[in-house]
Structure formats: structure tokens, C-alpha cells
Image (cartoon, rainbow, N blue to C red; front, side, top):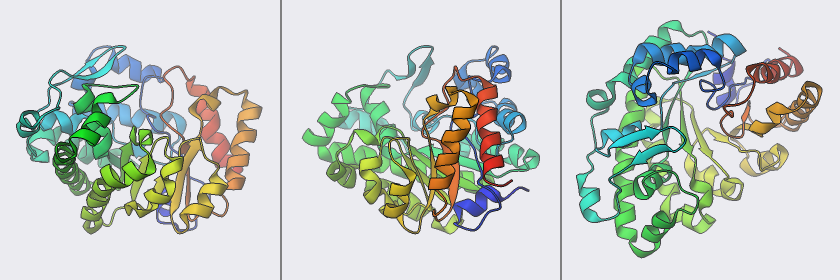
Length: 339
């Protein structure tokens, strides 16, 4: 087992900088497209054998130092009773939005093995195959709540913020239910064999720091606190969260993920005894290869004083990225950091 990634998560000395990429199993890979061409996205997420296949694809092709479970952050929301559909070009859709007490009352806190056992089976199968650590994950409560309230993705998050500011008790009630579901789900992933757990907060960057502190952070803290018995490293990634970094330190996470909007040196000064993960702009993978290597070298040089560092993108890899460019980045990280 190559445990370099685990060592970096724990802030231990590593022989080189480990690397993986968010959404590394996905549409930019032709082998993924081949699998995906015969099945819907949601059906793929619920078919363990195929999830194993697509999880392994980038590890095999690009020589990543960690694998991340192939799934979606909204799977638990469906298990809670929210009807979920995925539409090409539109993304996830919840037709029955949660905007009142009756909607909240319809949601259940599911048993993860009974309702999402396919995820745990995928983890068990992957552990038999992998020679690198496996990352399990979930969406953070705030991000998941936005999908349930808005009915899908949003640019303005009008309904979410309206509920926060005009019906705070309803909003907190929704967050409490999602938190309970998410904690149980991640505990089940840990029991199944996940070796690191990442919490994705994709939309939390829309919040002012004071609102993050009141409406989002306490629920992340509850989840991470509830996972301490697993002894697994926990990564918290707050997208567009440079203004929230000082508060994110209080999340309890062992590793803080960074998007590309902050300099790593600045982040290191602010986070102290936390490992960091990030933070190449995903579109920088389109740079000419010499320029890409130069940018990666600057990032590695800037991260030398980190208490553990994992190279990653600042968000998911774009679907039109040539796989050879991703491979160039992985090779550059390994070579320039001394592998």
C-alpha cells in the first residue's frame, strides 16, 4: 500500500508530495465515457461493480496517490426521501423542494446500509483492489440544503438565503436532519473501509463569514466531532472559501482544502497545525506543458512549510480537459517533489 497520501493528511513527513484530483473519475476520460454511454448517471452510482471500474480508471491511467469513491453528494438526499433526477445540461433536480415545515417533515433520517448499501459495497470491493488509500465523502449540510431548497443548482441562492433570514428555525431544522443523515452515512463509509473522509462544501462560499459561523459551520463541526471515533483523517473543502479560512480552522478537520483563489503561503500562515490540499486552477491544466510545470513548481515551493501538503486542483477537473494534460500535471508533481 502506498500510504504517502495518508501520511500527508496526518502532517507526517513524506518522500514526495502526493496528488489526486477532485472529480478525477469522470467525463474527461474516454474510458469513463464508454461506461457511461450505456447507463444513466444515477444508475451508475448505484451499481457497485461499475463504480469500482470508474473509480480505478484515473488511478491506473494517471498514477494518482489516492482514489476517491465514485458517487454523488446528493445520494443521501434521495435516501432521505427527496426525489432526485439528473438531467443532461441541467444537472441534479429535486422537483419537491423543501421550503416549509411540511416539506421538512417528509424527510427521514435513513439507515445508510439499508438505503445506500450500494455505496458501502463499492467501498468494500475497492479495498480489495486498491494499492492507494480510498477517500470516502459526503456533501456538507449547507451545500446539500441549497439543492433541496432551490430544487437544483442556482446562481443567486435566493430561496436558500430567504429561508435563512426569514425562517431561521425552519432552516436550522433542515440542517439538523441533513447533519444526522450525513454523519451516519460517513460513519457507515468508515466502517465499510474508507481510509479518509472528505466533506465537500461546494456552495458555502456564497455566505458572509458571520452567516457561515451561524448557519453552516456548527453542522460541519457536529459531523467531524461525531467521526472522531473512526480515527480517520478528515478533509473539509469549502469552495470559494478564502474569506472563511480562519473560521474553517475551527471545523475540526485534519486537512483543509483550498480553491485557487488564495496563495498557499498565505494559507499556511493562517492555518497553523493543519495540513492543506489544493489548489491549482483546474483550467491551468490547459497551459502549455512547460508553463504548467513552472506553475506547479511555484506551488510546491510555496507549500514547503505546510504541516502536510497534498497537491490537488482547486475544484473538479473540467470535462473537456485532455487526459494527457492531467497526466502531465501528476508527473510534474511527482518529479518536482522528489519521487
